[in-house]
Image (cartoon, rainbow, N blue to C red):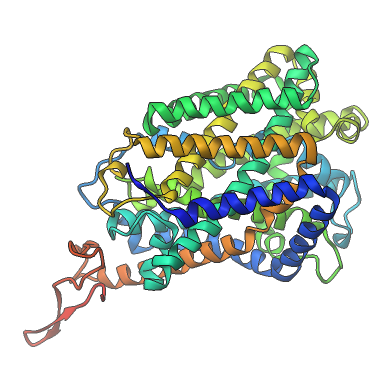
Length: 550
Protein backbone atom coordinates (compact mmCIF):
# COMPACT_ATOMS: atom_id res chain seq x y z
CA UNK A 1 0.00 0.00 0.00
CA UNK A 2 1.32 3.39 -1.01
CA UNK A 3 1.83 6.35 1.28
CA UNK A 4 -0.84 9.03 1.20
CA UNK A 5 0.45 12.57 0.65
CA UNK A 6 -1.23 14.43 3.52
CA UNK A 7 -1.17 18.03 2.25
CA UNK A 8 -2.73 17.42 -1.21
CA UNK A 9 -5.24 14.99 0.33
CA UNK A 10 -6.41 16.80 3.48
CA UNK A 11 -6.12 20.49 2.61
CA UNK A 12 -8.43 20.70 -0.47
CA UNK A 13 -11.21 18.57 1.02
CA UNK A 14 -10.92 20.33 4.38
CA UNK A 15 -11.33 23.78 2.86
CA UNK A 16 -14.19 22.58 0.66
CA UNK A 17 -16.17 21.08 3.54
CA UNK A 18 -15.61 24.17 5.68
CA UNK A 19 -17.02 26.24 2.83
CA UNK A 20 -20.02 23.93 2.50
CA UNK A 21 -20.74 24.08 6.24
CA UNK A 22 -20.52 27.88 6.18
CA UNK A 23 -22.87 27.95 3.20
CA UNK A 24 -25.41 25.73 4.96
CA UNK A 25 -25.26 27.85 8.13
CA UNK A 26 -25.44 31.25 6.40
CA UNK A 27 -26.08 30.79 2.70
CA UNK A 28 -26.65 34.45 1.86
CA UNK A 29 -23.64 35.77 3.76
CA UNK A 30 -21.27 33.07 2.56
CA UNK A 31 -22.24 33.44 -1.08
CA UNK A 32 -21.90 37.23 -0.83
CA UNK A 33 -18.32 36.87 0.40
CA UNK A 34 -17.48 34.30 -2.27
CA UNK A 35 -19.12 36.43 -4.98
CA UNK A 36 -17.06 39.47 -3.96
CA UNK A 37 -13.88 37.40 -4.08
CA UNK A 38 -14.89 36.00 -7.45
CA UNK A 39 -15.61 39.46 -8.87
CA UNK A 40 -12.25 40.71 -7.66
CA UNK A 41 -10.41 37.87 -9.41
CA UNK A 42 -12.30 38.39 -12.68
CA UNK A 43 -12.03 42.20 -12.56
CA UNK A 44 -8.32 42.26 -11.81
CA UNK A 45 -7.15 39.34 -13.94
CA UNK A 46 -9.69 39.11 -16.76
CA UNK A 47 -7.18 40.72 -19.13
CA UNK A 48 -4.67 37.98 -18.29
CA UNK A 49 -7.28 35.33 -19.08
CA UNK A 50 -7.86 36.88 -22.51
CA UNK A 51 -4.17 37.10 -23.40
CA UNK A 52 -3.42 33.63 -22.06
CA UNK A 53 -6.23 31.99 -24.03
CA UNK A 54 -4.67 33.18 -27.30
CA UNK A 55 -1.14 32.23 -26.20
CA UNK A 56 -2.29 28.68 -25.42
CA UNK A 57 -3.69 28.21 -28.93
CA UNK A 58 -0.60 29.72 -30.60
CA UNK A 59 1.71 27.57 -28.47
CA UNK A 60 -0.05 24.40 -29.63
CA UNK A 61 0.33 25.49 -33.25
CA UNK A 62 4.04 26.25 -32.80
CA UNK A 63 4.65 22.96 -30.97
CA UNK A 64 2.97 21.00 -33.77
CA UNK A 65 5.26 22.45 -36.45
CA UNK A 66 8.42 22.63 -34.30
CA UNK A 67 11.19 20.06 -34.11
CA UNK A 68 9.71 18.64 -30.90
CA UNK A 69 6.68 17.51 -32.89
CA UNK A 70 8.58 14.39 -33.92
CA UNK A 71 9.42 13.36 -30.35
CA UNK A 72 7.70 10.16 -29.24
CA UNK A 73 6.29 10.30 -25.73
CA UNK A 74 8.12 7.64 -23.73
CA UNK A 75 11.00 7.33 -26.21
CA UNK A 76 11.37 5.74 -29.62
CA UNK A 77 10.62 2.25 -28.33
CA UNK A 78 7.49 3.20 -26.37
CA UNK A 79 4.34 1.31 -27.30
CA UNK A 80 0.92 2.98 -27.14
CA UNK A 81 -1.30 2.18 -24.18
CA UNK A 82 -4.45 2.80 -26.24
CA UNK A 83 -5.60 2.70 -29.83
CA UNK A 84 -6.12 6.09 -31.45
CA UNK A 85 -9.90 5.65 -31.41
CA UNK A 86 -9.92 4.82 -27.68
CA UNK A 87 -7.50 7.65 -27.01
CA UNK A 88 -9.72 10.13 -28.87
CA UNK A 89 -12.93 8.87 -27.22
CA UNK A 90 -11.43 9.11 -23.73
CA UNK A 91 -10.07 12.60 -24.44
CA UNK A 92 -13.40 13.84 -25.77
CA UNK A 93 -15.53 12.30 -23.04
CA UNK A 94 -13.35 13.34 -20.10
CA UNK A 95 -12.96 17.01 -20.99
CA UNK A 96 -15.82 19.21 -22.26
CA UNK A 97 -18.31 16.57 -23.48
CA UNK A 98 -20.56 17.09 -20.45
CA UNK A 99 -20.70 20.79 -21.27
CA UNK A 100 -21.66 20.05 -24.86
CA UNK A 101 -24.77 18.25 -23.63
CA UNK A 102 -25.73 20.94 -21.15
CA UNK A 103 -25.07 24.12 -23.14
CA UNK A 104 -25.31 23.26 -26.87
CA UNK A 105 -28.98 24.24 -27.16
CA UNK A 106 -29.17 26.78 -24.33
CA UNK A 107 -26.15 29.02 -24.86
CA UNK A 108 -27.08 30.20 -28.39
CA UNK A 109 -30.46 31.39 -27.07
CA UNK A 110 -28.74 33.40 -24.35
CA UNK A 111 -26.49 35.09 -26.93
CA UNK A 112 -29.31 35.56 -29.41
CA UNK A 113 -31.41 37.55 -26.93
CA UNK A 114 -28.58 39.03 -24.85
CA UNK A 115 -25.59 40.02 -27.01
CA UNK A 116 -22.98 42.40 -25.55
CA UNK A 117 -24.42 45.90 -25.27
CA UNK A 118 -21.08 47.54 -26.05
CA UNK A 119 -20.98 45.94 -29.51
CA UNK A 120 -24.27 47.50 -30.55
CA UNK A 121 -25.81 44.22 -31.71
CA UNK A 122 -29.62 44.18 -31.76
CA UNK A 123 -31.17 41.25 -29.90
CA UNK A 124 -32.87 38.54 -32.01
CA UNK A 125 -31.42 39.96 -35.24
CA UNK A 126 -29.37 38.37 -38.02
CA UNK A 127 -26.26 39.95 -36.53
CA UNK A 128 -27.14 38.41 -33.16
CA UNK A 129 -27.50 34.99 -34.77
CA UNK A 130 -24.10 35.33 -36.43
CA UNK A 131 -22.59 36.46 -33.15
CA UNK A 132 -24.23 33.57 -31.31
CA UNK A 133 -22.77 30.96 -33.65
CA UNK A 134 -19.28 32.44 -33.71
CA UNK A 135 -19.28 32.70 -29.91
CA UNK A 136 -20.25 29.04 -29.60
CA UNK A 137 -17.17 28.14 -31.64
CA UNK A 138 -14.96 30.37 -29.53
CA UNK A 139 -16.19 28.86 -26.26
CA UNK A 140 -16.27 25.21 -27.30
CA UNK A 141 -13.52 24.44 -29.80
CA UNK A 142 -9.81 25.17 -30.08
CA UNK A 143 -9.29 27.45 -27.08
CA UNK A 144 -10.69 25.17 -24.34
CA UNK A 145 -8.89 22.15 -25.76
CA UNK A 146 -5.65 24.14 -25.96
CA UNK A 147 -6.06 24.91 -22.25
CA UNK A 148 -6.11 21.15 -21.62
CA UNK A 149 -3.45 20.34 -24.21
CA UNK A 150 -0.66 22.58 -22.87
CA UNK A 151 -0.29 21.11 -19.35
CA UNK A 152 -1.10 17.58 -20.52
CA UNK A 153 1.64 17.62 -23.17
CA UNK A 154 4.14 19.18 -20.77
CA UNK A 155 3.38 16.50 -18.18
CA UNK A 156 3.66 13.67 -20.73
CA UNK A 157 7.13 14.79 -21.81
CA UNK A 158 8.29 15.46 -18.24
CA UNK A 159 6.98 12.17 -16.84
CA UNK A 160 7.77 9.74 -19.65
CA UNK A 161 10.81 11.32 -21.30
CA UNK A 162 12.49 13.16 -18.43
CA UNK A 163 11.32 10.75 -15.69
CA UNK A 164 9.92 13.44 -13.43
CA UNK A 165 7.50 12.53 -10.65
CA UNK A 166 3.80 12.20 -11.35
CA UNK A 167 2.62 15.50 -9.93
CA UNK A 168 1.89 19.03 -11.04
CA UNK A 169 5.16 20.20 -9.55
CA UNK A 170 6.83 17.41 -11.52
CA UNK A 171 5.85 18.75 -14.93
CA UNK A 172 6.89 22.28 -13.92
CA UNK A 173 10.29 21.18 -12.60
CA UNK A 174 12.16 21.15 -15.96
CA UNK A 175 11.92 24.96 -15.93
CA UNK A 176 11.43 25.89 -12.28
CA UNK A 177 13.57 23.19 -10.68
CA UNK A 178 13.52 22.75 -6.90
CA UNK A 179 10.93 25.50 -6.43
CA UNK A 180 8.28 22.95 -7.46
CA UNK A 181 9.53 20.14 -5.22
CA UNK A 182 9.11 19.22 -1.56
CA UNK A 183 6.58 21.15 0.50
CA UNK A 184 6.09 23.73 -2.27
CA UNK A 185 5.28 21.01 -4.77
CA UNK A 186 2.67 19.55 -2.42
CA UNK A 187 1.09 22.98 -1.93
CA UNK A 188 0.90 23.44 -5.71
CA UNK A 189 -0.83 20.07 -5.99
CA UNK A 190 -3.23 20.94 -3.13
CA UNK A 191 -4.28 24.23 -4.77
CA UNK A 192 -4.85 22.53 -8.13
CA UNK A 193 -6.83 19.73 -6.47
CA UNK A 194 -9.07 22.24 -4.68
CA UNK A 195 -9.83 23.92 -8.01
CA UNK A 196 -10.65 20.59 -9.67
CA UNK A 197 -12.74 19.29 -6.77
CA UNK A 198 -14.95 22.39 -6.72
CA UNK A 199 -15.20 22.25 -10.50
CA UNK A 200 -16.28 18.60 -10.33
CA UNK A 201 -18.86 19.40 -7.65
CA UNK A 202 -20.25 22.20 -9.81
CA UNK A 203 -20.39 20.04 -12.94
CA UNK A 204 -21.96 17.10 -11.14
CA UNK A 205 -24.52 19.42 -9.58
CA UNK A 206 -25.58 20.61 -13.03
CA UNK A 207 -25.62 16.99 -14.13
CA UNK A 208 -28.00 16.01 -11.34
CA UNK A 209 -30.44 18.71 -12.46
CA UNK A 210 -30.16 17.65 -16.12
CA UNK A 211 -30.80 13.98 -15.35
CA UNK A 212 -33.63 14.79 -12.95
CA UNK A 213 -35.24 16.98 -15.61
CA UNK A 214 -35.04 14.17 -18.15
CA UNK A 215 -36.45 11.54 -15.80
CA UNK A 216 -39.24 13.92 -14.88
CA UNK A 217 -40.33 13.87 -18.53
CA UNK A 218 -41.00 10.12 -18.25
CA UNK A 219 -42.19 9.46 -14.71
CA UNK A 220 -42.86 12.90 -13.22
CA UNK A 221 -40.57 12.44 -10.22
CA UNK A 222 -39.48 16.08 -9.97
CA UNK A 223 -36.12 17.10 -8.53
CA UNK A 224 -36.58 16.69 -4.79
CA UNK A 225 -33.56 16.05 -2.54
CA UNK A 226 -34.46 12.34 -2.44
CA UNK A 227 -34.48 12.10 -6.25
CA UNK A 228 -31.19 13.99 -6.54
CA UNK A 229 -29.65 11.78 -3.83
CA UNK A 230 -30.67 8.63 -5.72
CA UNK A 231 -29.13 9.91 -8.97
CA UNK A 232 -25.92 10.96 -7.18
CA UNK A 233 -25.67 7.56 -5.49
CA UNK A 234 -26.08 5.79 -8.84
CA UNK A 235 -23.29 7.87 -10.40
CA UNK A 236 -20.99 7.19 -7.43
CA UNK A 237 -21.73 3.46 -7.56
CA UNK A 238 -21.01 3.30 -11.31
CA UNK A 239 -17.71 5.13 -10.84
CA UNK A 240 -16.75 2.63 -8.13
CA UNK A 241 -17.51 -0.30 -10.45
CA UNK A 242 -15.37 1.33 -13.14
CA UNK A 243 -12.54 1.83 -10.62
CA UNK A 244 -12.66 -1.86 -9.65
CA UNK A 245 -12.24 -2.93 -13.28
CA UNK A 246 -9.07 -0.88 -13.78
CA UNK A 247 -8.38 2.24 -15.80
CA UNK A 248 -8.07 0.69 -19.24
CA UNK A 249 -11.20 -1.41 -18.84
CA UNK A 250 -13.43 1.04 -16.99
CA UNK A 251 -12.93 4.43 -18.59
CA UNK A 252 -12.14 2.93 -21.99
CA UNK A 253 -15.44 1.02 -22.07
CA UNK A 254 -17.44 4.00 -20.82
CA UNK A 255 -15.80 6.40 -23.29
CA UNK A 256 -16.21 4.03 -26.21
CA UNK A 257 -19.89 3.58 -25.39
CA UNK A 258 -20.37 7.29 -24.89
CA UNK A 259 -18.76 8.28 -28.19
CA UNK A 260 -20.96 5.81 -30.07
CA UNK A 261 -24.02 7.36 -28.44
CA UNK A 262 -22.75 10.82 -29.39
CA UNK A 263 -22.24 9.79 -33.01
CA UNK A 264 -25.63 8.08 -33.16
CA UNK A 265 -27.41 11.17 -31.85
CA UNK A 266 -25.47 13.36 -34.29
CA UNK A 267 -26.54 11.19 -37.22
CA UNK A 268 -30.17 11.29 -36.07
CA UNK A 269 -30.16 15.10 -35.83
CA UNK A 270 -28.35 15.31 -39.16
CA UNK A 271 -31.13 13.29 -40.82
CA UNK A 272 -34.24 14.62 -39.05
CA UNK A 273 -33.18 18.08 -37.87
CA UNK A 274 -33.05 21.37 -39.80
CA UNK A 275 -29.62 20.53 -41.21
CA UNK A 276 -29.77 22.97 -44.11
CA UNK A 277 -30.43 25.89 -41.76
CA UNK A 278 -27.79 24.75 -39.27
CA UNK A 279 -25.13 24.21 -41.94
CA UNK A 280 -25.71 27.57 -43.63
CA UNK A 281 -25.82 29.49 -40.37
CA UNK A 282 -22.82 27.52 -39.10
CA UNK A 283 -20.69 28.41 -42.12
CA UNK A 284 -21.63 32.06 -41.66
CA UNK A 285 -20.80 31.92 -37.97
CA UNK A 286 -17.55 30.02 -38.49
CA UNK A 287 -16.40 32.66 -40.96
CA UNK A 288 -17.06 35.32 -38.34
CA UNK A 289 -15.21 33.24 -35.73
CA UNK A 290 -12.08 32.71 -37.83
CA UNK A 291 -11.89 36.26 -39.18
CA UNK A 292 -12.45 37.80 -35.73
CA UNK A 293 -10.71 35.25 -33.54
CA UNK A 294 -8.31 37.74 -31.97
CA UNK A 295 -10.97 40.42 -31.53
CA UNK A 296 -13.33 37.98 -29.82
CA UNK A 297 -10.57 36.49 -27.67
CA UNK A 298 -9.28 39.88 -26.53
CA UNK A 299 -12.76 41.34 -25.88
CA UNK A 300 -12.84 42.32 -22.18
CA UNK A 301 -15.72 44.81 -22.30
CA UNK A 302 -13.81 47.20 -20.04
CA UNK A 303 -13.87 50.19 -22.41
CA UNK A 304 -17.62 49.90 -22.88
CA UNK A 305 -18.32 49.08 -19.22
CA UNK A 306 -19.79 45.80 -20.43
CA UNK A 307 -19.86 42.81 -18.06
CA UNK A 308 -20.80 40.31 -20.78
CA UNK A 309 -17.25 38.86 -21.20
CA UNK A 310 -16.94 38.37 -17.44
CA UNK A 311 -20.08 36.25 -17.27
CA UNK A 312 -19.46 34.29 -20.45
CA UNK A 313 -16.01 34.07 -22.04
CA UNK A 314 -13.97 34.64 -18.88
CA UNK A 315 -16.30 32.36 -16.94
CA UNK A 316 -15.65 29.54 -19.42
CA UNK A 317 -11.89 30.05 -19.43
CA UNK A 318 -11.97 29.99 -15.62
CA UNK A 319 -13.96 26.75 -15.64
CA UNK A 320 -11.60 24.97 -18.06
CA UNK A 321 -8.57 26.21 -16.14
CA UNK A 322 -9.82 24.80 -12.84
CA UNK A 323 -9.91 21.34 -14.42
CA UNK A 324 -6.80 21.57 -16.60
CA UNK A 325 -3.79 21.08 -14.24
CA UNK A 326 -5.01 17.84 -12.64
CA UNK A 327 -6.78 16.52 -15.73
CA UNK A 328 -3.45 17.00 -17.51
CA UNK A 329 -1.98 14.18 -15.41
CA UNK A 330 -4.63 11.81 -16.72
CA UNK A 331 -4.51 12.94 -20.36
CA UNK A 332 -0.71 12.90 -20.40
CA UNK A 333 -0.63 9.50 -18.74
CA UNK A 334 -2.67 7.78 -21.48
CA UNK A 335 -0.62 9.32 -24.33
CA UNK A 336 2.48 7.13 -24.08
CA UNK A 337 3.70 5.76 -27.38
CA UNK A 338 2.50 8.60 -29.62
CA UNK A 339 4.39 11.59 -31.01
CA UNK A 340 3.86 15.18 -29.93
CA UNK A 341 2.11 15.92 -33.24
CA UNK A 342 -0.24 12.99 -32.74
CA UNK A 343 -0.88 14.24 -29.21
CA UNK A 344 -1.87 17.74 -30.38
CA UNK A 345 -4.13 16.29 -33.08
CA UNK A 346 -5.88 13.92 -30.68
CA UNK A 347 -6.15 16.16 -27.62
CA UNK A 348 -6.80 19.50 -29.34
CA UNK A 349 -7.64 19.39 -33.05
CA UNK A 350 -9.94 16.36 -33.47
CA UNK A 351 -12.07 17.04 -30.35
CA UNK A 352 -12.40 20.68 -31.45
CA UNK A 353 -13.68 19.65 -34.87
CA UNK A 354 -16.15 17.24 -33.27
CA UNK A 355 -17.32 20.00 -30.92
CA UNK A 356 -17.77 22.41 -33.84
CA UNK A 357 -19.94 19.85 -35.65
CA UNK A 358 -21.99 19.20 -32.51
CA UNK A 359 -22.52 22.87 -31.76
CA UNK A 360 -23.44 23.59 -35.37
CA UNK A 361 -26.19 20.97 -35.47
CA UNK A 362 -27.60 21.42 -31.96
CA UNK A 363 -27.09 25.18 -31.70
CA UNK A 364 -28.59 25.67 -35.16
CA UNK A 365 -31.53 23.43 -34.28
CA UNK A 366 -32.23 25.46 -31.15
CA UNK A 367 -32.21 28.79 -32.98
CA UNK A 368 -34.25 27.37 -35.87
CA UNK A 369 -37.09 26.14 -33.64
CA UNK A 370 -37.04 29.39 -31.70
CA UNK A 371 -37.35 31.37 -34.93
CA UNK A 372 -40.16 29.33 -36.49
CA UNK A 373 -42.10 29.20 -33.20
CA UNK A 374 -41.91 32.92 -32.50
CA UNK A 375 -39.66 32.61 -29.45
CA UNK A 376 -40.95 29.40 -27.81
CA UNK A 377 -37.45 28.19 -26.96
CA UNK A 378 -36.67 31.47 -25.18
CA UNK A 379 -39.94 31.15 -23.29
CA UNK A 380 -39.02 27.62 -22.21
CA UNK A 381 -35.67 28.89 -20.99
CA UNK A 382 -37.27 31.68 -18.97
CA UNK A 383 -39.99 29.51 -17.44
CA UNK A 384 -38.27 26.15 -16.84
CA UNK A 385 -34.51 26.82 -16.75
CA UNK A 386 -31.52 25.95 -18.88
CA UNK A 387 -31.81 22.18 -18.41
CA UNK A 388 -35.29 22.12 -20.00
CA UNK A 389 -34.36 23.40 -23.46
CA UNK A 390 -32.84 20.23 -24.87
CA UNK A 391 -35.95 18.25 -23.95
CA UNK A 392 -38.21 20.84 -25.59
CA UNK A 393 -36.07 20.61 -28.75
CA UNK A 394 -36.38 16.82 -28.83
CA UNK A 395 -40.17 17.13 -28.66
CA UNK A 396 -40.03 18.85 -32.07
CA UNK A 397 -38.31 15.80 -33.64
CA UNK A 398 -39.70 12.37 -34.55
CA UNK A 399 -39.26 9.55 -32.02
CA UNK A 400 -38.88 12.17 -29.30
CA UNK A 401 -39.43 9.69 -26.47
CA UNK A 402 -36.68 7.38 -27.66
CA UNK A 403 -34.28 10.25 -28.32
CA UNK A 404 -34.92 11.73 -24.89
CA UNK A 405 -34.21 8.37 -23.27
CA UNK A 406 -30.98 7.99 -25.27
CA UNK A 407 -29.96 11.51 -24.27
CA UNK A 408 -30.47 10.67 -20.60
CA UNK A 409 -28.22 7.62 -21.03
CA UNK A 410 -25.58 9.73 -22.78
CA UNK A 411 -25.74 12.33 -20.01
CA UNK A 412 -25.37 9.72 -17.30
CA UNK A 413 -22.43 7.99 -18.97
CA UNK A 414 -20.79 11.37 -19.67
CA UNK A 415 -20.96 12.41 -16.04
CA UNK A 416 -19.67 9.02 -14.89
CA UNK A 417 -16.79 9.10 -17.39
CA UNK A 418 -15.75 12.61 -16.41
CA UNK A 419 -16.00 11.78 -12.71
CA UNK A 420 -14.06 8.52 -13.15
CA UNK A 421 -11.16 10.10 -15.03
CA UNK A 422 -10.97 13.08 -12.68
CA UNK A 423 -11.10 10.79 -9.65
CA UNK A 424 -8.22 8.80 -11.13
CA UNK A 425 -6.20 11.99 -11.60
CA UNK A 426 -6.95 13.21 -8.06
CA UNK A 427 -6.00 9.85 -6.56
CA UNK A 428 -2.71 9.79 -8.47
CA UNK A 429 -1.73 13.16 -6.96
CA UNK A 430 -2.72 12.07 -3.43
CA UNK A 431 -0.54 8.92 -3.57
CA UNK A 432 3.22 9.15 -3.13
CA UNK A 433 5.08 6.85 -5.53
CA UNK A 434 8.55 6.60 -6.98
CA UNK A 435 9.43 7.97 -10.38
CA UNK A 436 9.82 4.48 -11.79
CA UNK A 437 6.72 3.04 -10.12
CA UNK A 438 5.50 0.25 -12.38
CA UNK A 439 1.90 0.82 -11.42
CA UNK A 440 1.88 3.89 -13.64
CA UNK A 441 3.37 1.89 -16.47
CA UNK A 442 0.64 -0.75 -16.17
CA UNK A 443 -2.72 0.97 -16.33
CA UNK A 444 -4.63 -2.26 -15.75
CA UNK A 445 -3.63 -2.36 -12.09
CA UNK A 446 -5.38 -0.63 -9.22
CA UNK A 447 -3.78 -0.82 -5.78
CA UNK A 448 -5.83 -1.17 -2.60
CA UNK A 449 -4.80 2.32 -1.53
CA UNK A 450 -5.83 3.81 -4.84
CA UNK A 451 -9.14 1.93 -4.84
CA UNK A 452 -10.29 3.07 -1.39
CA UNK A 453 -9.00 6.57 -2.02
CA UNK A 454 -11.09 6.78 -5.20
CA UNK A 455 -14.18 5.70 -3.27
CA UNK A 456 -13.55 8.40 -0.68
CA UNK A 457 -12.99 11.06 -3.34
CA UNK A 458 -16.00 10.34 -5.53
CA UNK A 459 -18.28 9.83 -2.51
CA UNK A 460 -17.22 13.17 -1.01
CA UNK A 461 -17.77 15.04 -4.27
CA UNK A 462 -21.12 13.31 -4.79
CA UNK A 463 -22.25 14.33 -1.31
CA UNK A 464 -21.14 17.94 -1.82
CA UNK A 465 -22.94 18.17 -5.16
CA UNK A 466 -26.13 16.70 -3.73
CA UNK A 467 -26.15 18.88 -0.60
CA UNK A 468 -25.47 22.10 -2.51
CA UNK A 469 -27.98 21.33 -5.26
CA UNK A 470 -30.69 20.22 -2.83
CA UNK A 471 -30.37 22.72 0.00
CA UNK A 472 -28.00 25.58 -0.71
CA UNK A 473 -28.26 26.13 -4.45
CA UNK A 474 -25.71 25.33 -7.12
CA UNK A 475 -24.51 28.91 -7.50
CA UNK A 476 -22.38 28.68 -4.38
CA UNK A 477 -20.29 25.84 -5.76
CA UNK A 478 -20.15 27.39 -9.26
CA UNK A 479 -18.74 30.63 -7.89
CA UNK A 480 -16.48 28.76 -5.48
CA UNK A 481 -15.02 26.87 -8.43
CA UNK A 482 -14.04 30.15 -10.07
CA UNK A 483 -11.80 31.01 -7.12
CA UNK A 484 -9.44 28.27 -8.24
CA UNK A 485 -9.03 30.00 -11.59
CA UNK A 486 -6.12 32.27 -10.69
CA UNK A 487 -3.73 29.64 -9.28
CA UNK A 488 -4.75 27.25 -12.05
CA UNK A 489 -4.03 29.94 -14.65
CA UNK A 490 -0.57 30.46 -13.20
CA UNK A 491 0.06 26.70 -13.26
CA UNK A 492 -1.00 26.37 -16.91
CA UNK A 493 1.09 29.42 -17.82
CA UNK A 494 4.03 27.77 -16.05
CA UNK A 495 3.39 24.62 -18.11
CA UNK A 496 3.36 26.73 -21.28
CA UNK A 497 6.70 28.37 -20.45
CA UNK A 498 8.12 24.93 -19.61
CA UNK A 499 6.95 23.61 -22.97
CA UNK A 500 8.54 26.59 -24.73
CA UNK A 501 11.84 25.85 -22.96
CA UNK A 502 11.67 22.21 -24.05
CA UNK A 503 10.91 23.25 -27.64
CA UNK A 504 13.85 25.68 -27.66
CA UNK A 505 16.30 23.12 -26.30
CA UNK A 506 15.11 20.37 -28.61
CA UNK A 507 15.29 22.71 -31.61
CA UNK A 508 18.96 23.34 -30.81
CA UNK A 509 19.53 19.60 -30.57
CA UNK A 510 17.83 19.01 -33.90
CA UNK A 511 20.60 20.56 -35.95
CA UNK A 512 22.19 18.12 -38.43
CA UNK A 513 24.95 17.17 -36.00
CA UNK A 514 22.49 16.32 -33.25
CA UNK A 515 19.15 15.46 -34.82
CA UNK A 516 19.29 11.88 -33.50
CA UNK A 517 19.54 13.02 -29.87
CA UNK A 518 16.87 11.83 -27.48
CA UNK A 519 15.86 13.15 -24.09
CA UNK A 520 17.83 10.79 -21.85
CA UNK A 521 17.30 10.91 -18.07
CA UNK A 522 19.96 10.28 -15.48
CA UNK A 523 19.45 6.87 -13.86
CA UNK A 524 20.51 8.16 -10.45
CA UNK A 525 18.28 11.10 -9.66
CA UNK A 526 15.95 11.61 -12.61
CA UNK A 527 17.62 14.88 -13.64
CA UNK A 528 18.50 15.55 -17.26
CA UNK A 529 22.12 15.02 -18.24
CA UNK A 530 24.62 16.45 -20.69
CA UNK A 531 24.49 14.36 -23.84
CA UNK A 532 27.75 13.43 -25.64
CA UNK A 533 27.11 15.04 -28.99
CA UNK A 534 29.56 17.07 -31.07
CA UNK A 535 29.43 19.55 -33.93
CA UNK A 536 32.11 20.48 -36.43
CA UNK A 537 33.82 23.88 -36.23
CA UNK A 538 35.85 23.33 -39.40
CA UNK A 539 39.45 22.24 -40.03
CA UNK A 540 38.80 18.98 -38.21
CA UNK A 541 37.94 20.73 -34.93
CA UNK A 542 34.86 19.67 -32.99
CA UNK A 543 33.22 20.80 -29.78
CA UNK A 544 30.62 19.12 -27.56
CA UNK A 545 26.99 20.24 -27.68
CA UNK A 546 25.38 20.27 -24.26
CA UNK A 547 21.80 19.14 -24.78
CA UNK A 548 20.46 19.57 -21.27
CA UNK A 549 22.37 21.19 -18.46
CA UNK A 550 21.98 19.69 -15.07
